[in-house]
Length: 408
Image 1 (tube, helix red, strand yellow):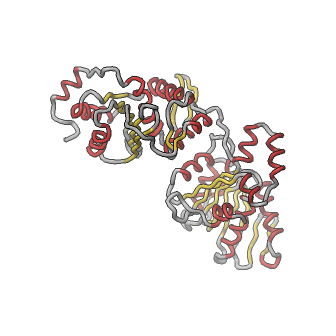
Image 2 (tube, one colour):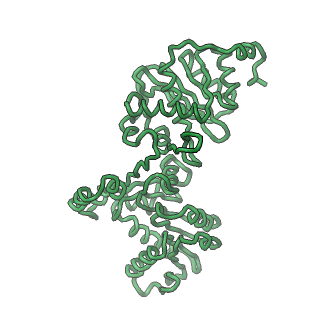
Image 3 (cartoon, one colour):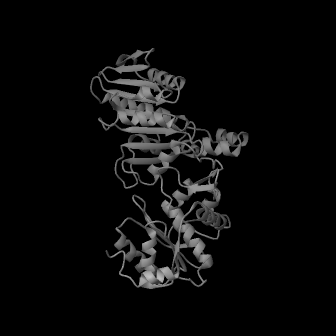
């Protein structure tokens, strides 16, 4: 096995440098993900106790059968007993490796499983993953999730992004054709021929593990990549955008310099009084557009009370968010704004839109955040309008004369 393959499958490390129980591997075709995982699962089973179960789960029965036959042919015959009907290999130590289909997710509930491989995850129903995940709860068994990428609208893409962004206990790896060529597993000329033969989108998915845009990203993945900056840009902010965290969300502040690059970036979760103080301290007298939706309204009032007219509120509605995101899309496609590598780029990559009866809906996929996207969009919008005088409504001035609502 080559080093990247071995680490991803046998010694996965999470974003914080700790051993990971779950490894999510987006891989090109024929890079060794399946062979490596078969070897890993055999070693897990060989080190376990009699009667303990280890599952290999594929989208359909014929794919499970392929893995069964490959492992059966690769092991010494004296160390296992094969059951062709059930697709099981019972090892000499009494452990059992099962090869299962995900076609009927309900059939995956109920067992205790001590290790598992999800094969071809991008082609498997999410309900099957949910069912398999419950079988590992009691045992806390390790899990390997592998597959080719297949667009962005599937659970495998989403869980890969969670792992990439630092989900506790998860590691993320990408294994591409170039890795396998460098290791001598694949032939470089064969890859070059595939690039000539296949449509660009198909080649990029199958050999570079780059998901197609699916037409669902309003910014364009190539445009986002062209705007990436590796660290904070020099200079002072000329405009801030603040998206306020509600519930489990993050509060995110983005400061843009004169050139439109990100020169300040904060992402945190704090109680409201500390949030207000952080925003006040970081922003100073620089013009700032602040999320005033719901609980954000009294926050904006408090900021206006203490520092004055450089803070302006922005209420998110479907229509206002559409305008805001279309402005951000123009800035990204014109490359007039920087995109900070890390959570900001990752959220932009995942961001999507869809047409509904009432208009266009912009949002992160279900279960993900878009706080960085909204903060950047607010900063971009305000940078273009920051010189306009801020008009504070009489109702806000009246409330400013009352005791602080955030102090109570």
